[in-house]
Image (cartoon, rainbow, N blue to C red; front, side, top):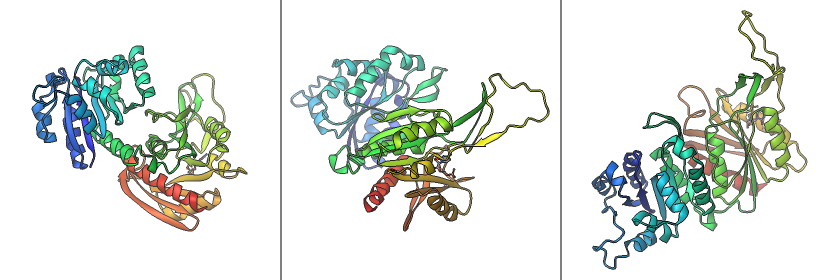
Length: 400
Ligand code: C5P
């Protein structure tokens, strides 16, 4: 059972942390909560006491604690210190080693992994000094989850919303389960190349053709490969996701750029996973000026793009190559056909269409095929699914 020390600092997102405690406990974790003074103005300690089943800690110097060293024993107790929400102020204090209350002092005393889930107004998040503080914390080994993009309590829109409790909980368990423990580094020494997200094929300065893809599966795979101890390169089309901390991120827009980026990296990697929704065709002409609305009909001439996955698999010293197949019918037939036609080592197929997971969803189910076997992975969170798929890839890699 995991022991999670939840630090709550003073932001409006503090109310979401109540739900977070409930979810963490549902996963079987023990939770203790430390609140800052300003957090208590947003939500009562009693709420966290009731949900965690433990008294809430708020004072640095607590005469009730026998030797008045509550911060040390709390730091020793925790398997993970999770600070959610983490305000701009708390991030600044952590980055500079200030310790003027219980939470900041526990952070200094903690030797366990530390995860922060920032939440603040988008301008505060974008401020250079906040970004510098976050970079500093990343260098110090702190994991940063979010923030997400969207509408904010202050009425503005942008990056600054705290990551949803369900996602924090899922990521926390995915990361700590596969463990930062060396025993779980089954891909140590491997270099994993992953392509993710859609590609955009422009035909004038304001328009493009694209595929539906959030990039969530590819990004979750990048995190799973990192957790397994691999060095990870992520070639990504335009998505609204933050890359996992520690990956080499190469941002691309078009299928041709993705092809160039992947091909320049493929031979130096031992695994390639093509999770991107690459456009099959792109407009032959990209007009330099916006096409005016005049003719009743407009014809776009499209040219077939290179198949990146097949090109990687055709390389002399090709990595273990894994593709994806999103199908609306005859899943196994089409998936197996792609496996052989593109000369892949493995293919992960999923149903798409109404009532399926897939595209924007946080969940998905996969049926994975390789030359002499297959395995079904059930409908679960993409972070967990990615962990399972990565383990399967490693297993098959060993077998070849
Ligand atoms: O043939 P189909 O597009 O259905 O195959 C899907 C798989 O092929 C995915 O893994 C996708 O990333 C990859 N692909 C590619 N280059 C393309 C088209 C698809 O690598 N031009």
